[in-house]
Structures are given as structure tokens and as C-alpha cells.
Length: 536
Ligand SMILES: Cc1cc2nc3c(=O)[nH]c(=O)nc-3n(C[C@H](O)[C@H](O)[C@H](O)COP(=O)(O)OP(=O)(O)OC[C@H]3O[C@@H](n4cnc5c(N)ncnc54)[C@H](O)[C@@H]3O)c2cc1C
Ligand SMILES: *[C@@H]1O[C@H](CO)[C@@H](O)[C@H](O)[C@H]1NC(C)=O
Ligand SMILES: *[C@@H]1O[C@H](CO)[C@@H](O)[C@H](O)[C@H]1NC(C)=O
Ligand SMILES: *[C@@H]1O[C@H](CO)[C@@H](O)[C@H](O)[C@H]1NC(C)=O
Ligand SMILES: *[C@@H]1O[C@H](CO)[C@@H](O)[C@H](O)[C@H]1NC(C)=O
Ligand SMILES: *[C@@H]1O[C@H](CO)[C@@H](O)[C@H](O)[C@H]1NC(C)=O
Ligand SMILES: *[C@@H]1O[C@H](CO)[C@@H](O)[C@H](O)[C@H]1NC(C)=O
Ligand SMILES: *[C@@H]1O[C@H](CO)[C@@H](O)[C@H](O)[C@H]1NC(C)=O
Ligand SMILES: *[C@@H]1O[C@H](CO)[C@@H](O)[C@H](O)[C@H]1NC(C)=O
Image (tube, rainbow, N blue to C red; front, side, top):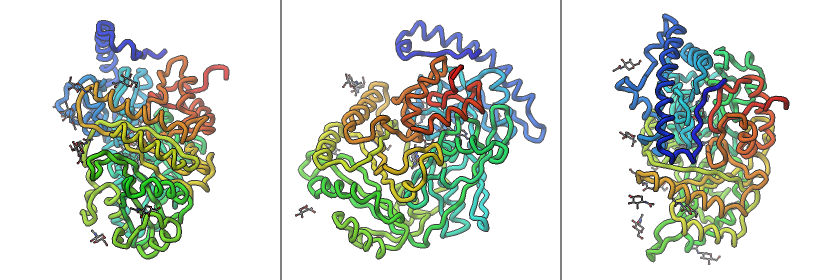
């Protein structure tokens, strides 16, 4: 029997009850905590003492270890639930001990690699929990001969890109734009970036993996089998085990690539250009990826106006790019002076808003350029939005002001890979994915409510223009508005609600695999894959 304490939202305002629960929680936790630590210590190998990896709240470094990988300030408040222990694994055996002991003591484990989960799912829980923190396990071994690399879960994308760059100026890897994102969450949840039209997602370029399963066994692709290997390439690692490392196929990039960032406001025909973008962005040369951001700025007349920004990576030189643009997307009016030819590694910096010319080793920094409070949501666009529709969207964006929409074009390689090849189901038939983004700096729950409310309103306004039945969403853009799993007796029906949105037809196979590899639902969180209910 699991002894989880569930806190329904309605109860949160009922202080006396909350207080009682908290007190009983603390005492029950300290009781289990002692024997849990004892279990960890008894599983310690003399050559790799686990004691050096244990941080309890009484340790002076506990808070800084906890805060080091909080990437959303919404979860850095004094009322945010704290783990009663952080285990900063230094060796695979520490992961194995964590799983074996947590399983034995029925403790909720949260696994954190880069900490970029939009909803803090890797380091916050509503029930007593501890964090297995992976940041120390971040080695990267590249073999240029086979054009492959073993990458540990605690590495960041920036570290992966930099280590590849050290070995070769003509190789890269198709993964996310933000260099501080962690491999563990990013790869296991899909992982896309500006080379996806050419090479697909990160998961489309993973060829082996190491995972610690619910029994504490260290498995590779061969010993885990093809089902589990399939699941941890897009279905989220945290439902199935602890991903220790992935073996990736690195990809070829030209010596010279071209980038540009061009913005058009409404009085510069943004609507017409965006309309055209929708008809070409998913059909262009696979070497060309044009991201579109819609947001709101101050116009020259002091009134708010809409702005469309086109941010591009082209795997080729600027002459070639200009000829492709002239043929396929002349409406943007791209000029040679808008373009910068550079190396692939520099293009990564450009895309994350460093000026070209910044030293490449800034990719090794594990600290983000800035931290804010944030909320994200996602949608899929299947067919172009009409000009009238775009006018409505601009009106709403200006009304709400702070929420931006980022459109990432699909097509190319994305449309060629079958929807069942990995758990990530959003392949052919998608024009673009939208990310809703709002960032803010004001502290206080009322501000959080205010900004989250804005994103929900925009999401509601967007209903006519996006996918339906299901309204699809991207798993790596974790959004608890889509449903929360309390992992009680309704776990399957709760999980189905968000599961179908994230995984469509692949949800069924994920549940089947989950039920086989973790029948007791040890690896669980607010949006994990549920097990089949008994008798189904
Ligand atoms: C600034 C920013 C930029 C982003 N840009 C992109 C982008 O360009 N493309 C894109 O696809 N996504 C992007 N994302 C989303 C990002 O891919 C996901 O948030 C991803 O899950 C983060 O991985 P992480 O290891 O940093 O996160 P964590 O918060 O550590 O983990 C995220 C989830 O994965 C689980 N997990 C982590 N490590 C392991 C492990 N070793 N084994 C099993 N489960 C594990 C966690 O328990 C949690 O459920 C971005 C996010 C941010 C904050
Ligand atoms: C905190 O924990 C770490 C890891 O176990 C240990 O090395 C360190 O000495 C502890 N610090 C204090 C002040 O207890
Ligand atoms: C997180 O909260 C702590 C404690 O209030 C604070 O000291 C720290 O500065 C916060 N971190 C950020 C990045 O704001
Ligand atoms: C906008 O489009 C119209 C016609 O479609 C054109 O005459 C005008 O020059 C364009 N304006 C800008 C700023 O490109
Ligand atoms: C935009 O205008 C508002 C006033 O309407 C002002 O407060 C704000 O600072 C301006 N923003 C920028 C980026 O200029
Ligand atoms: C980018 O391109 C512009 C226009 O060609 C050029 O003026 C500028 O110097 C380039 N910037 C860098 C950093 O190369
Ligand atoms: C929040 O503050 C950071 C710097 O601390 C700033 O760069 C950013 O523009 C601010 N964001 C908003 C939404 O005000
Ligand atoms: C939140 O509360 C603070 C302090 O009470 C207030 O100044 C601020 O205007 C409030 N914000 C919103 C969005 O209501
Ligand atoms: C959120 O929006 C709803 C409906 O528009 C409104 O009733 C509610 O007061 C808003 N909440 C906040 C905190 O702004």
C-alpha cells in the first residue's frame, strides 16, 4: 500500500487542515527518512561512498543545491514543497541504491537532470519526496570514426554541442535551442530544435541507452528490449526508469551556415507575410528552418502593435539562401545584408540571443542568461490560418499584451518519419507547433494567477485555428492545465486525458510497456504514463 498524502486544491485554502497534514507529514517523513538514509548507506560501495551525495535540509548547502537547477521562479518560493533529501548521484551505483531503497520505503522519487521542466515536475511534488539529481553525471564521449557519442543524462545541450565542436567543425546534433537544457529530460521527452526539418528530433538520432529500472538493474538497449527502448525516446524517462545515458548519432553540418532575424510590424504587412509563411514554411528546402514569433511591441505612434519575427537557420551559404528565399518566400523581402554567414556552433549562440562573435565556450556555462517566472502551453496547426483569423489573433495578442506565440515549422524529415516510430506522434499533417510563452518578474501568487490566466485566455481564443480531437500538445512543453495525475485509483483515467494529447495513438503502447516494466507504478509523477487498471 502506498501512503501518499494527496492535497486537493480546494483544501489548500483550509489552513488548519493543511497545518495538521504538514505536521504529520514532517513527522512521518523524518521517521522514514532515517531508515531510507540507512538503506542508502548500506547499499554504498566502498569505492563509491554514497554519503558524499546526500544533502538533507540540515546541510548548509541543501538550499543552493536545490536552487541550482530551478529554472522557473514559480517554484522557488518559500511555500513550494521541498524534498527532504537530495541525492546528487556521483556514480551509477548511487542511482541503483536510490531506486532500490525508495522502492522499499515507498517514497516518491523525483528525477532531475537539467531542471528545465516548465512545471517543476522534476523537483516539486505534492507528497513527501526526494530528488535524485543527475547533474554530476554529465560525461560526453564522442567517437568520430562511427560519428556517435555517449552522453550522460546530466549533461546540458550546450556541453553536447561544444564537445562535438571540439572534435569537428562539420558535425552537430539536432536538439533544443537553449543550451542549459538537460539531456535527461530533453531527449527522453522528444527534443526538437532548428535542424528538425533536416534530421528529425533528438529521439530520431538515438541508437542506444542506459537505464536503471525499477529493480535497480542497469540495462542497455539489448537488455532492456526494444519496447522499453522505444518508450524512452519520447515517452518521458521518468515514467519508466532513470536514464543514465544515451548513445546518439551525430549529424553532418556544412562548414558555413547562414542565420537571420527579420521583424515586421503590422504596418509593414506582417499579416500578409505571416499568411504566406504558413504556405511555405513546412514545404521549403529541408536545410531551411524559419521560426516565426508573434508578439506585441510599442508602435511608432505609441500604440501597441503586432510584430512578426522570423528567425532562421539555413544549412548553407547566404547566396544559396537568397535564391531559395527569392523563389519560395519573396514576400519577406530578405536582403543579403540581413544575413550572417557563420559556423554551426556560432549559429547555436545566435539562436539563443548571444551576439555573433561570443566565445564558443559560453556553451559550457550551466547558468541560464536570466531566470523568470514563466508559463508555457502548446498547440499544433494543421492548416494555414486565414487572414481574417490572423487579424483576430493579432487583436487578442494586443489585448493580452504579454503572451507571445512561437511557431516552429514542421514538414521535411518530420513528415517522413512514421507517427509510430517513436512515442512522439506529431509527424505528417502538421504545419507547425505553437508555443505559448509568458515570462514575468513580479513576485506574488496574484501575479502568477494573472499571467497564467492570460495564457489560458489566449489558448481558448486559439481553439478554432488548431488541432482538435484531440487538441494535441508537445510533451516536453509540460502543461499541467492538461490534467494532473494523483496516481490513486483513477490513475489510468486521469492519465488518459493528457496522455492522448501528448501521445495520441502511441499512448496505448506506452501504457502497455509501463504496465510491464513498472507494474507497481513506482516511477510516477503529475503527468506520468499510468499503468493499466486491473482487469483490462
Ligand atoms: C529555456 C528553455 C528552453 C527550451 N527549449 C526547448 C527546445 O528548444 N526544444 C525542446 O524540445 N524543448 C525545449 N524546452 C523544454 C525541455 O526540453 C524540457 O523541459 C525538458 O524536459 C528539460 O529537460 P531537463 O533535463 O532540463 O529537465 P528536468 O526538469 O530535469 O526534467 C524534465 C522531466 O524529465 C524527467 N527526467 C529528467 N532527467 C531524467 C532522467 N535522467 N531519467 C528519467 N527521467 C528524467 C524529470 O523527472 C521530469 O519529468 C526548453 C525548456 C526551457 C526551460
Ligand atoms: C553537506 O553534504 C555534503 C554531501 O554529503 C557534505 O560533503 C558536506 O560536508 C555537508 N556539509 C555540511 C555543512 O554538513
Ligand atoms: C530563490 O529563492 C531564494 C530564497 O528566497 C533566493 O535567495 C534566491 O535568490 C532565489 N533565486 C532566484 C534566481 O531568484
Ligand atoms: C505592403 O503591401 C502592399 C501591397 O500588397 C505594398 O504596396 C506595400 O509596399 C507593402 N508595404 C511594405 C512596408 O512592405
Ligand atoms: C512601451 O510603452 C509603454 C507605455 O505605453 C512603456 O511603459 C514601455 O516602457 C514601452 N516599452 C518599450 C520597450 O519601449
Ligand atoms: C552580420 O552581417 C551584417 C550584414 O552583412 C554585417 O554587417 C555584420 O558585420 C555581420 N555580423 C557579424 C558579427 O558577422
Ligand atoms: C525580467 O527581468 C529581466 C532581467 O532581470 C529582463 O531581462 C526581462 O526583460 C524582464 N522580463 C519582463 C517580462 O519584464
Ligand atoms: C498583486 O498584489 C500586489 C500587492 O498587494 C499589488 O500591488 C499588485 O497590483 C497585485 N497584482 C495584480 C495583478 O493584481
Ligand atoms: C482569471 O480570469 C477569469 C475569467 O476571465 C476571472 O474571473 C478571474 O478573476 C481571473 N483571475 C485572475 C487572478 O486574474
